[in-house]
Length: 395
Image 1: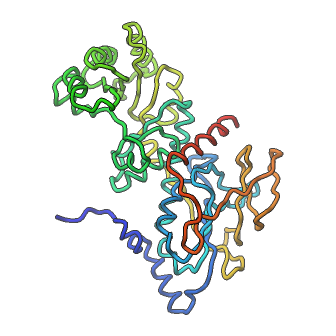
Image 2: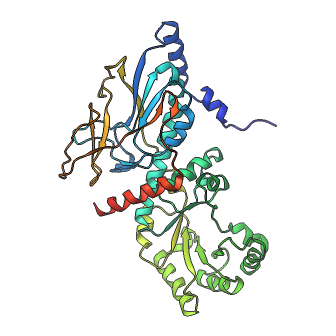
Image 3: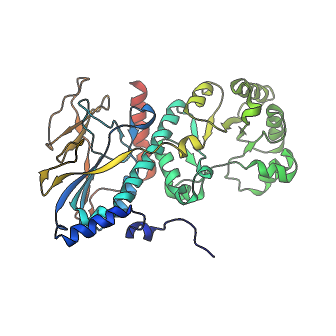
C-alpha cells in the first residue's frame, strides 16, 4: 500500500520538511569553518492579516518539544499571550528568541515557523469568534475542511483561542476533553426519517453523550424540533445547520423555533446553530436565544500569521538584514491596554501611552537544551486567553 503524502514526526525532526536552502546554508557554514558562530534569532511579524489589531501567540509548547535536547536556549512570551506585532515606534516585537549556533537549529527553521504561524492564526480567529459570540458556547467543527494530518494542531489552537470544545478524537485527546458532535445528515438519510435516527441515537449512544439532535435534514425546523423532543428522552438541544438556500432570515428562523419549543413546554432545550458561520454572521444572531455556535472553516482556514525568523545578533554583536532592527531585544507589554514595547535592556522602565508602565513579558523556556519552564495544559493556556479577551472587550 502506498504511503500517504504526510510527514511523520521523524521527517520533521530530521529536517525533511525544511526548505532546501537551509540545508545548503548548513553545509556551507560547516565547510567554511563557521559552524560555531553563536547567534540570536528572533521570531517576529511586521503586521497581521485582515487588519487585525492583535493576535494570539500559539504553538510554543510544540516548538519546545521539537527543540528540546538541542544545544540551544530559548526565551518567548507565554503561549496564549495577546500581542500587537509592532511597538508605537514601529519596532517589530520579538515573540521568541533562540540562542545558539545557527547550524544546531537552522534546519528546523521551516518547522519552527510553521508551528508558530498557523496555530497563531487559528487561535486568533477563534478568539475573535469567541468575542463575537459574547461568551456563548463556540464549538470547533473545522477539521473536515483541512488535511487530516493537522487535525490535532487545528483543534488545540482553536481551543486555546477560546473555543469551548472540539470535534475530533485526536483533538479531544490533546486538550484533555471529550470531543463533541451530533450526527451527520447521512444518518437521517440512511435511517429513512428523523424519528428513526433520533431514537436510534438515544438507544445506542452512551448516556453521557449529550442528546443534541440535528433537525434540518427533511422537514421544517420547528416541526423537526418538536419531533426531536418527542423522540428523545432528556433532550439537551437541537442543532440548526440550515443551508443558505433555505435560510432566508436566519435570525427570524431561530426565534420561531425558540417560540415553538417554549410554547410546547420545552424551554430547557437549547438551540445550537452551525453552517458557514464566522465572526460577522455570528454577531448578527448572537442576541437571539441561540445557546451556542458550531464554527468550521472560518476558524480552521484562518489566515496564517506572517512571522519570520531573523538573525539579530552574531557572536554577541548586533546585526540584521535591511528592514529589520538589530540586537537582542526584550519584550514588554502594558498590562492595561496591551500595547507592546521592546528594549535592549532586561530590566527597563518603559512608559505606555495610556499612563501605565509596561512589564517585561518574555520568559526563558529552554536553557542549554533543557526545559526550564513548567508545561501548561491547553485548558490553562485557554483560561489565560479568555482573561485577556475580557480586557480586550473593555478597550
